Structures are given as structure tokens and as C-alpha cells.
Length: 287
Image 1 (spheres, one colour):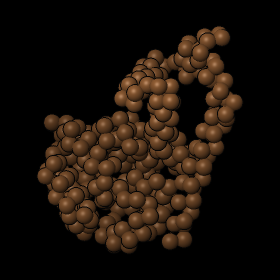
Image 2: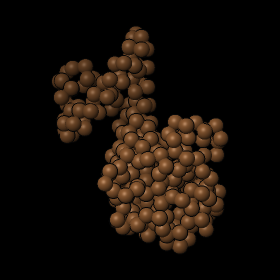
Image 3: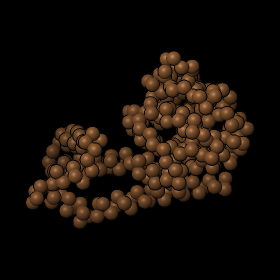
Image 4: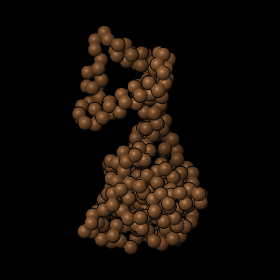
């Protein structure tokens, strides 16, 4: 097993072998992480994955050249176990993992709403756990991931997780009590953007534009606007005001959005998502 107090940076040619990573549950997010690690310099033999659907397992093994293994082999071989199953599937997985790993194996949870204390309690010992809230742009290498260490995770563990996740996007470290808010904001955030884009495309069709034209107009406008936010560093209010001329078309549109309570609806929606994340965690407190 790897000495995690001196973990090499992934992909450096002069460093020893990378820590072996096993992804438990190779869905879209799990596949995206493996693909990102391969692009960052990981070798296929340093990546393992579990997958309960044989056809999916064969497809991934061929495309990524990573090795499909059973859970007991993943637990015995890997330095890092990345849990990428749905929260509702966590109980049977933890039942099988209990007794298979010890304090030398780092567990990284990508499960929305599930606290590090759940994994520590169910797996026993001094299992180091780092909780991660990713989002779906991971599949194009543009994820926003927030990470929080459990009570047994060291600074070296956190640094290793930051290195792994930087292969698929941006990473921030936050206290775990803020994870439910992050889940609601950036974890679910892409869905809000897609919902807004969908509504704007429908508006373009309503105004008589062909669907393909409306899609091109809105997708590029959304891409350009978010790129401006990222690259200029300007506050969104400043950029919005630059488009909003006195007495013009945009201010009339903004007035209608405010009249229909769009801002308040977003606040309520994100609070509701936060509350559901809290519920998911509480549902497992006594498990």
C-alpha cells in the first residue's frame, strides 16, 4: 500500500507509481473520473473498477483499458476506494466492505447527502474518509468538486483527493457542515442551468424561430456569458447592468422576471435541494 504521507503527484514521470484507485460503481461520474485520471498520467493498470452490469463492465474495460474486478479484490488491492454509487445503494455496499478494509485504505465518497461519520461508523477502525460533492460537468473535465475530510483523514489524504479530482475540474475544500448547501448549489446547479436554457429555447420557438436556431443562439449565449464571468472576474450584477440599457428591451425582460418571482423561486428551489440533502443524511443516521 502507498505511504500516504508522501503521496506523489499523479502523472509525474520521476515519481513512483501512483496510488492504485478503484472506483466502486462505474456510472457516468465514475467513468468520467477514470477518464480524467488517465488523461492526467495514470496508467490503466493503476485503475480498477466495479460494475454490476456485465455489458457495461466489458464496454468500460475495452474503452479505458482499466480492469474490472469484484469488490473484495478492489478492497484488497486499491490504495483509494472511490464510492460512486447512488445514496440508496450504499447500505449493501457498506455491509460487504465492512471487514475488507482498514486504516491504510482511503475511502472517497461521491454520494450526495451521506456524511463521513456514516462510513466511519459502518466500516469501523480508523478508516480515513473524504466526502466529495461533484457535479456532472465532470464528464467533460469541467467539474466543480467540494471536498471535506472525515475525523480520520489527514492533510495528506486531502491533498491526494485534490490531486485526483483536479484531473476533472476545479476543487475547493470546505467544512463538512457546508456540504448540504454545496450539494444544493453546485451539485444540482447544472440542472438549473439546463432548465433555464430549455425555457429560453422554448421562448425562441414561441417567438417564431426554428428550434435549431433558437438552440444555437441560447447555448452560445450561455457559454459566452459564463466564460465572461469566469475570465473577467466582474460581479454578475456589473455584467448584467452593462446589457441593461435604460428604457431598453433587457430591463423590460428583467422586470417581468422579477414580477414572476424568478429570483425568489431560485432561492426556494435551492433551499429545497439543501433540505433534501439533509434528509438523505439523516435517513442513514441509525443504519
